[in-house]
Length: 272
Image (tube, rainbow, N blue to C red; front, side, top):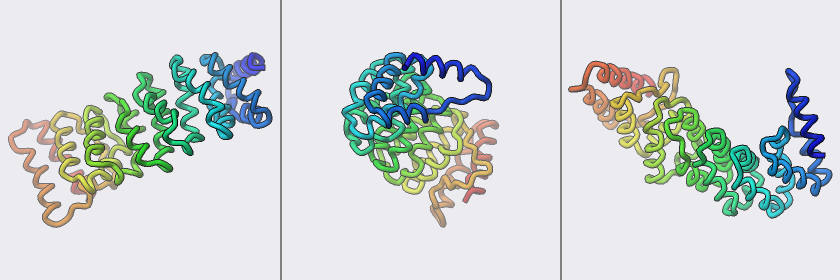
């Protein structure tokens, strides 16, 4: 059956404008859990075949009854090649295991967010986004372990995952996430949201982070047309002091950095 389904799916994939979704595989697993489990195992053993991309849907149906039924397959995917690990990341993103947040799935997720495959890390960060709704502290722990390098896309995925729970970060976790964002050349929408969230309780650290980026040439923050307040709601004398700190940073620097700092100053002021 798996070979026939794979052959038919391959043919459909080759047709322009045809998209094969997972509903057939979900229906099979719901009608016959044993058959669904067998298909999921076949997908795990043949991770580069056409229907392997539906393994997460099969596993989600089977695992909704008992996580133990799928953990053997998950362990196989865990030690597999990149397509197999992507299957594992996709399954974890379904969230069927959130009822047991400290089981082996959490350990698997921690491994996936440091994977050397970009697609796997991005999919694992989608799991962190969904996990944050039910288990925010665990989501933060996993998020600050993620390896994003200098990748702007992964930085955005990471920040999107935690943008609603910035108030739950510890001081150390704030510093660790800022450290991870430091080498990223372009920080976009979700990064701005996270920085604004951090700034409420860590104004000095966020401002220092931003000033360092400007001085190092990583000045892109997409502040234009943004409504975020990167000074964390500072007002009165504190606001004046923070803006003065930005102004004073322009003293004694070369022309290009001075221009960037001046631009940064007005971008901050306009968003208050």
